[in-house]
Image (cartoon, rainbow, N blue to C red; front, side, top):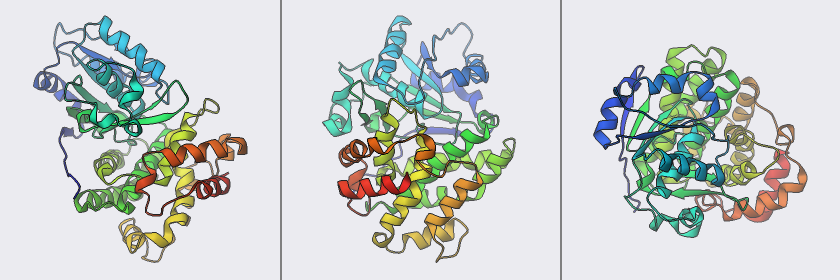
Length: 376
């Protein structure tokens, strides 16, 4: 019997960021480190957050977060945290700043090295409630990391691994769709497909968790309906609200586990060159994995299809491929710069990934090679 828990407090609506001072007081943060990235700084969103801090409260800013957060960047963030004598973190941005802030929150209160806290290394039992408090403010509708219990980090040895613990769920999440209105179409598309993949993979996972499954199904319905309008008209407030809700629901369903799409996208995202966007990788891989799993999900594809506004008999893989084309995403890994030479290593790493056991069809290394070759 799985443990079902949704343990954080969420502010969700336009204008929700106005509640930041109250949330800082509620979780006892007096000297926060603001973790963000250069894109958020350039868009003026970090400045808006800083302006909300109570009078006299100074917050150092760490903005050197790469698109795929690295162990080196985590150490730099930890140095900024200690130099500012901080007692908590506020993460503003997509999944990268939020995941990096989670890793800093671990090392601020736990001894290094970081790799001992990764799930595949038995880290879930080493992460305690002593983690530094974190408030997460997403600016993309994608990873749902603001309510997730994991942090994906590319380690110095080249592996992209996840630290997973209920103690990594941010103490507060502030989901303000207003912060996503200026997100460019390409990022809206890539992050939106990340969120859709979360909902789909969680729903078809063999783990029995009906509440999480229902949430994933609802998220898939919202994203399938509103992703194209959000890409085509970024200022569409209804679409942005629905996309942020769908992304959050995708992460709420993580308790069911993900699957082969993520098992493959994690090592692909760890490649030093080319630098690959996680959500776009998921979008390209999803049709191929849907075909691989088709005979092993019972009626779940039919239920997904109906929820997403399709007929029961619709081919979900074809639908996703068509959706990718419509929102301007690449059709193949090759178009993203991935070469055949990396396929054996990616397949080997995918077999070790924490998402492989919860794929509905047990893949072999040869299966992963075949999926990758088809996606190239």
